Amino acid sequence: MSEFQSRVLKLVSMVPRGKVTTYKELALALGRPRTCRAVGNALARNPNPVIIPCHRVVRSDGKIGGYKFGERKKAKLLLMEGVMIKNGKVYLQNFLTKLPKSR
Image (cartoon, rainbow, N blue to C red; front, top):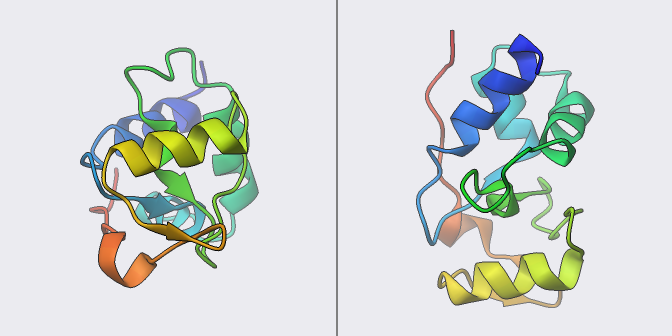
């Protein structure tokens, strides 16, 4: 596992149940604002998606985005955690959590 992926997964582990973050927020927290796609690739290789909650990462426009087990499963997990989804989008204003800068 690369250092970058390790940092991404560590940050995702900080997102509490019932909240989400975005690929962009993760990139900003890493101090690398142009790496949104690399963040997504790191999450796609999450070795333990049950423990490291990569389903809590959505697109900046609120759309669910991709997930190793499919978009429907991702939406179901978010709904079970209390995240409201309407028309395929998360209400970011209610459920977005900001992450601290990572070193």
